[in-house]
Length: 76
Image (cartoon, rainbow, N blue to C red; front, side, top):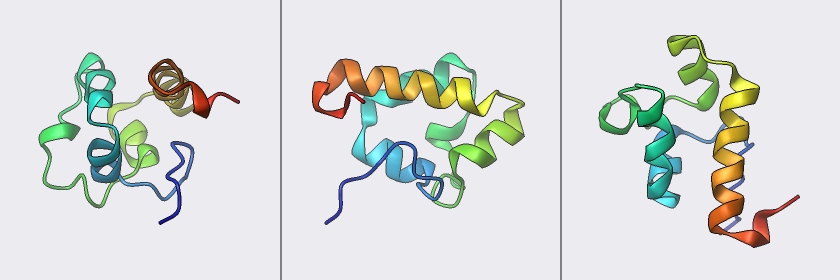
């Protein structure tokens, strides 16, 4: 199985929550309902940011920083 990449444009929110459950915190900090949403298997970060009017680059940056804190192998 290929390694998941948080910057993969096709990565669904459900895949993020399954692979990195501790990232739910970022979504809740932004007051999204994504972790409990039945549409999460179909939505991507692009969809989330459009729906909640979030800056996609900044949001991805938060996810990436948290991932790097938790798994130093992911540092760029």
